[in-house]
Image 1 (cartoon, rainbow, N blue to C red):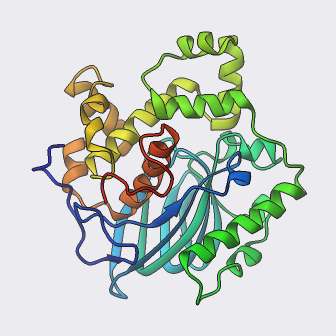
Image 2 (cartoon, rainbow, N blue to C red):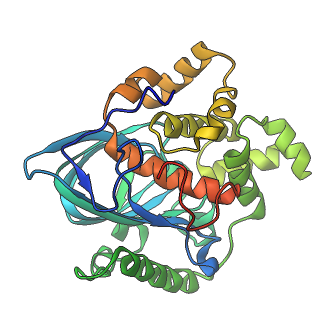
Length: 314
């Protein structure tokens, strides 16, 4: 996407955290405290104001499980189990294999955190493969939805809410033994951020493990084969670029991950349900918020920016 081809925005919404240079909505999001980093990828708070009867029709595409607390808004999502309606709920989102249609009516507040691949397995939680493209109440995951909904002081700041989630997660982790996710999983997660064009064979060789062991580990902790994880990572990085929430200096490198334009269009359309051109032309506020959170973590992980530093799109 050239700087003359800016992504479409929805002027009916106003984000409390402001907007990017292209006018895309932003959330408050940050890395977890160091003691929680093995299990948590990111924490976020999104507060968006819209007309009461306004229906925002969008989607999400996340590569990790999420705990999402929907404090405001009337939400609808098309999941692997059918259409889900929610309002004022505490939910577990499994990782996505492709874009999930999601809509919300009226102003909304969404608070939550990403669980790193392998965290659920290490903490004796839900299996990733069993929750692909699914959403469940936290109660179904052995957590208390009411407890999570009560964490957030209405007069608190986004940082207060993030700290409340961190304190709750410390108790959960300690109560479930505090086992750290497998190192091989963490290395593969990092490689998906650094170079998702790497072959599975080469990664296994560089790690000094049998490819079969790598595939078993990734299927268990990501819920899908390694090749599919890397394919998704390429598409999410490209989507972030198209929505204007990526480091523009990486634009050429991101494009070179695809053989040619037809390869990009085919892969992107299969995963997002629309062509790259359509993705740019259609307002995607919910998608952009999620992509911005992921891309912030990615740039910090690969050390293109430091935690807390101004991001390239701000």
